[in-house]
Image (cartoon, rainbow, N blue to C red; front, side, top):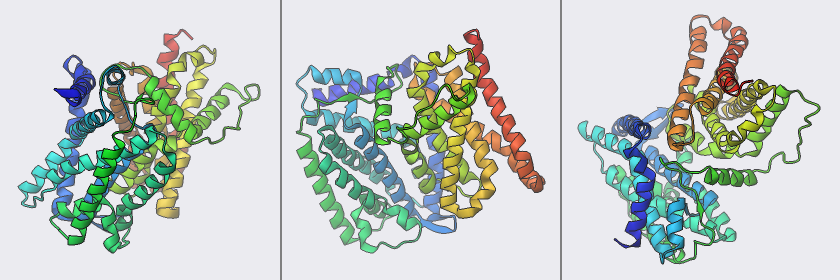
Amino acid sequence: MGHVGVLLSLRLKEYFGSLRVSRTSLMVMLGIVFSMFVIGGGLGYVVARGGFVYWGLSISREVLLSSLLSFITIFLSFYSVLNGVGGSLTDINYVASSPVSPRDYLVSDMLFQWAMLNVFIGPALASATIYTYLVGAGDPFLLLMEAYMFVAIGISQVFGVLKQVDRREVLAPLFLAFLAAYLTPALEIVGIELGYLRVLALPNVFAELMVGRVQPISIASLTLQLAVLTACYLRLSNLNIYYNLKPTLVGFAPISYMPQLERYRRLTRLLPLLRFVELDTERFGSFTLSLLKELLRNLRSGVLLASVPFMLYVVFLVPVRGRAFPVFISLSIAIASVELWRFAEKPALWSFLQSPDARSYFAGLIAGSALFIFALSLLIDLLMVGVEGLRLIPYIAASSIASSGGGIYYQLRFAKGRNQLADAFISMTLMGLSSLAAIIPLRLIEVYMPVLLFPVSPPYLLLVFLAFYSKCSRGVVRDIGL
């Protein structure tokens, strides 16, 4: 089978092996596939229509497809810049004790990432293709999307190898130039014409080919960039990437918390905000201390950095506006906040629960997380839509409380750490449903009694907070006998 085949087979079995024995893993996997299939139908509808109107801006299907490709590439590259080249503990142990060349390891990793992208994105591409062909607007974007996945993975691996061998003097300027080129779809979304400069980014070139538009300059740019990428890949794949190899793969199988905690520490080093602040335990009460601690944790742990991919998805790929926009933004930040809390603080939760005033910890945890999410969401909302965003304060506050409370509740009561991807997926789903349930009453009040929206909001938000505080604290505190 060769080294590449053995490594690929080993990683696929380790990642998906529990699907054969765990009904929870299988149901989560089917849920992800079904969700992406439904989302793909929406993508196919937009592509068949030729585009859509977003916040008064007319966005063509070409710009939409280039935005999608750019998002995938930036997400993979951002991950590689943070983590370098990684894998699971098992394949790292195999590599460490076998004569596997770095190139074989990287090729197997590329094939695995391609398989993973097809598992999670493939259903959306399939349903989009089916829809466009059924309505007679079929473009060859499925095959081109599959080909582009290899390009995106190759670019991310180049950054990963540079990170792995600690070539920061090359990595930093190269990644900044890459971001400048691959964020050009965002400029086109707001109506800025780039002309021939758009061919500097491969997503724009591939998007042109997907909609059947072929230009000589685009073909020349595509050929040149692929040649340069191939040459860089072949050169860098001979470097020694093993001496600093770390486990970063999270699968459907039981694994330890160490890879996640190591990523958390790297995020913390990237954003050394407020390191000089110290909390005086003698000065503050239990609730205030817990609230301030949670605010500092969110500021220091890189929540904003971790939520950037989710927010980019909301801003450029989800056609939401009005009240839905800040709700999606707050949900994005809440997902990052709860996930980092799960990896960083939850394993040490027992130490907080030994306090005779453990309930104050949960009150401060939810309040501090919600306050941070609310402040950051409101700031982003004001930057995006201006002072009009002030009208949406009740919705942002309700979503912040409910999404953080729902995620923390699931992590406390149901997540056991045996299936971490399933826990993350169910937690995010529950956070979204909690946020939706919290804003529906506000919307009904605004529709039928708009004068009462702001007067009623404070007591309503207090009730939402108390409901999640009660759910989070009651069972856990009862379990330890406090």
